[in-house]
Length: 333
Ligand code: AQP
Image (tube, rainbow, N blue to C red; front, top):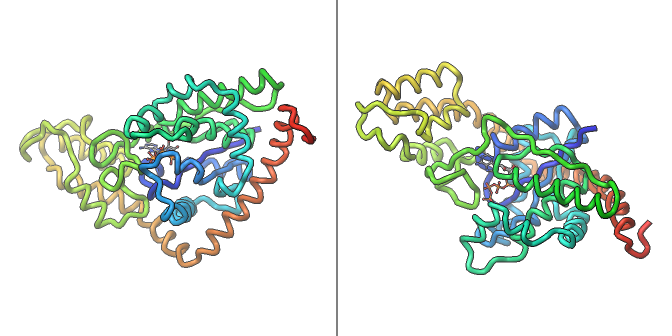
């Protein structure tokens, strides 16, 4: 039996990296696996990065993340969709896994090194992030995890954590595998500085719910092939950020035309960007229209999440009973 689990952090407005790398996949797998597709807004993870956490906005960002996912097509009636802090078992299983995970393994995680490198004082929670993530996945005995490429190392660690627990306490958890969206492994940021990331802020991201004017404002000045200085210089689409976005948003004909136009200097960068805007509008406008409708009915969003948390608890409770019993806790059934 396949069971899918994935989480998304409410650390900012969802962007097209999240959308193409993960959210679209959530919907597709949700259609296929229904109640065995479990998705979670991982709010307990958000405060692990003090640069991206603000208590005054966490609740709004959590709501907006739910709204965005529902607008993209995630149906809380069909799948299980909820907020992590509403299911206490995540924290409990996370603690149990910290007991068995060597600190050295956690210090090797690339995401930890990237984020810790920017901080003067590193919260222990940042180091423990992938342990809680393993608990998120294994609490549901999920074996399939749709994520972007940046999360593959964490999923490998989850497999290791499952193996270690099974070895010590007997077969309990599956060893889950990451499922990647091959066309959107690592969507680059609009500033041209590495992957698009919520916590890098507004200059890096193209928001799923961002207005077309605002997107155009950033796209107009975003970097292209640095060797193409004048309009008459031929360019190389393979080193151009805008062409990376064309691959996500444009149809095959447009893709061929802009690539050819760039190489022969037949199209200027601004015209190329305008053609990209057509694809962006086509993809995001219907999502944004659904988001506006849903925003007028906040109880539907909150009700969907509450219903999801109830279903999640029903799956998680017997798994935690099993874990407590195998750990030898007094009174565990
Ligand atoms: N640029 C990206 N390209 C492809 N996939 C991406 N994902 C994130 N950025 C890209 C995937 O989106 C899912 C949810 O991500 P997350 O919220 O759990 O955290 P993240 O990977 O750390 O994403 P951000 O935007 O970079 O958030 P912050 O800045 O808060 O850390 C994941 O499956 C991720 O792979």
